[in-house]
Length: 496
Image (cartoon, rainbow, N blue to C red):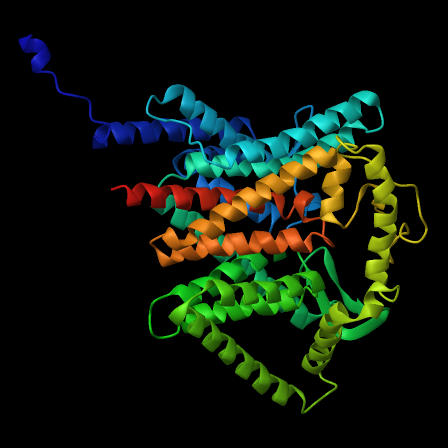
């Protein structure tokens, strides 16, 4: 016993031990670089380091998924790993996060899975389209590789469970949110820079084009639509609310500048439907906010209007300048929302959607309850909408429809759409009924902002297939998860 009691516990912080470990690892790296390519060795070291960082801070992987799906990078630019099934880097990150959840649940006795009120509705919304697709693949009308590709994008809604189970502390939540705001700001800066350079000098891949409205081209006005405009849109709403709910008497000019930058980037998207729902968001904020907060919102709006008037006055001096063309194009683009001619065959964009909808309705009726599954072709080739673009490329739009609500009905039938309505109503009800109870104004802004942003996306989906898009599915899952984390932490702090 005396011998055992005299033994000293081993200390891994011992300098001699650390030197020996460092020398041993150095020898391993040296031999590896001799036997294999130094670049390969470096890649493995970075991969191991990143895996360790993700284990310690899973929110890094969540931000990585957003960077790779909702920034300035397009899906076809990402390298693929072929393991019988082709996987993109964000696919590996998502699988890794879900794997960490299961691993910790299995090996850590004090790690319990977090259950939230949204779990069931989100799982139902995910499972029904998967079953519809399996039926379609089994019966033959859907090719398995097309179904797998579409299911992969849809699977990013599962980021919800990664957030609710791995983001448990306030520091993690703050890190994730700050990362989203920084990503949105970087994307917005890139969009503004691309607009200033014009379409002739393209620094962003994807849709960088001269604006056209009702068959009229506006030379010198560039439309910029990187995948990350989704993060810019959501962040604009949240940071605007954060600016309003900040109890500081003085206006945060840095935050005001950030909101202005994000708003400017959204103008350059020229997405009329999202401009319209942003107006709806502003009106809802006037209704939801009370007292000093409502006055501050009006004051911020007044400052913005004043700055816009000053800018317009300067711009009007030279009506042929690019800023003047931008203003003219924006006014024309926005005014078409309220013109009857827009919906009566004089807008090519809406005509395209009308053709799609005409084919979609009978296809939905023929498969009313379970739909056609992912990767379906719901209509024949139609020369009115199916044609190569000016660059000679061709995308098979027979599997695409702009109306997100009809897309869900097509892919998973009435059962799938009802599950979407259930999930959406549940998420919105929890956000709008609980945001006032969150004590911290920043997190209060997040809950209200994400709820308003989702409502806007749901309405704008009439003309945009947001529910099944690469740029939206990870972000929507993360938004829902963050709201549940905030509400859970608020409830826990309220019980103390």
